Image (cartoon, rainbow, N blue to C red; front, top):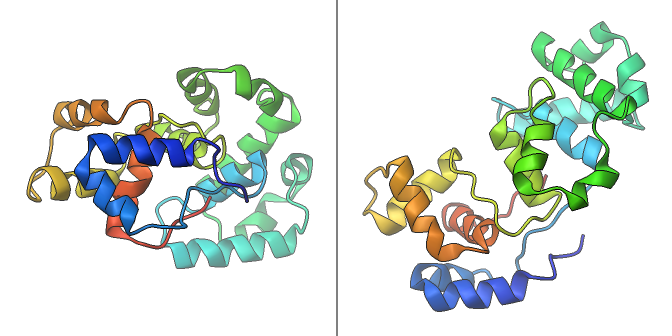
Amino acid sequence: MKAPDYWKKATRELSACDPVIGKIAAGCKGLTLRSRGDAFNTLARSIVGQQISVKAADSVWLKLTTALPVLEPALVDRHDADALRACGLSRSKVVYLKDLAFHFSNGKLNPALWPQMSDDELVEELTQVRGIGRWTAEMFLIFYMMRPDVFPLGDLGLQKAMSLHYNRGRPLGVRKLAALSKQWQPWRSVATWYMWRSLDPIPVEY
């Protein structure tokens, strides 16, 4: 799992323009954003983990990958819905996984084209899949595509961290959050990652 090639430069520039980031980054030596898996597995795992605890999501994922050791779109597409439900998936998540598999199997989602697409174009394409909203798409852009300037405005952890560091713990409105993030461009993914680390020192990987 290789760190993004822009990470050191982004951290230096963010630390220089924002003392808050500088202090957090100083406590995160050796830690960076990292990706794992492939595109289908990353998106499938994000669907599995929706609205349940990390521990519960890990349990369901283990059952799913035991039932389907090779988690490929065509196999998920053909797999019996009741068998997927038996892994601990809700009825709606089975529908979402099947739709994701269908989009990959039929070329409606083509990872080969993604490097040439803008962040907004990719978010628009991914959110055509049932069960994938803007937040899930943005997590995919950060953790799998390693895009450097994604700002997931709707992320509750990010909102909490920014209110703590920039508004003495009081909630910040959407406009204020967006305005504060401008100083972080073009490295808002990196700044967001450091905001998350200020709440939880252990990095999450998708």
